[in-house]
Amino acid sequence: MRLSPIAVLALAFATLTSAPAMAQAPNGAALQAEQREKLTPLSWLDGTWRGTAVYPSQNGPITITQTERVGPMLAGTIRVIEGRGYNSEGNAAFNAFAVLAWNTATKAFEMHAFNDGRSGVYPLVVTPDGFGWEIPAGPGKVRFEATFKDGEWREVGTFEMPGRPPRQTVEMRLRRIGPSDWPAAGAVPRQ
Image 1 (cartoon, rainbow, N blue to C red):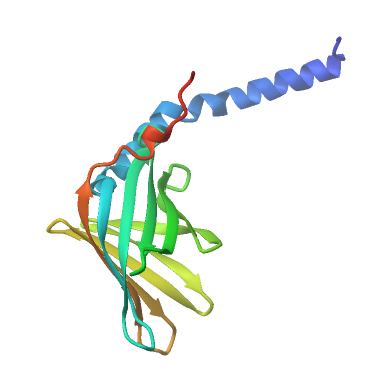
Image 2: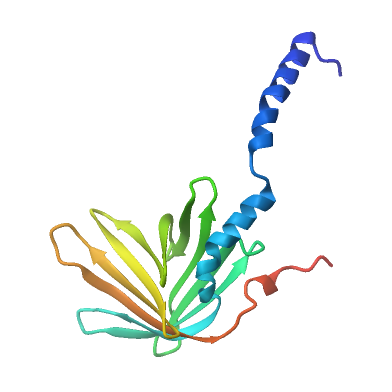
């Protein structure tokens, strides 16, 4: 296939003008190193956890057994979390999945969350002793704050509506029950 002289010039121009931008762009290894470094403060999450989650209701608090498993994935550039809650009969009462990530383009943490047919990407704030995020809920929001202190992962959800006092929606208290090779151990072998 022969290119017309104009096509050759257009291709040469595109190559020459994109080369400086490509040379200045960080390489994948540098981006991954940045992601791993930024996620290091959340490494305390890695492992398997068990405890309780308490939800308020009109008939009094409902307590379920809450479990979480957390691990790094993609060479430590993201952290994945699966939460499962079980009622007193042992049936699944809650199941959620999240990906914690550092976005190298925006220079900000993100939580990609999935639960009960809903999903979203939410700004994540990493603090010296945990993390937090907010989910929009109409004119209000649900704010989650997680802390790690004295071996306990405590997470509190609060519904906040303008002009009304905040209302707690959940309190989770977990203890690490062991390490986890999840999700890395789930990789499909080459052969």
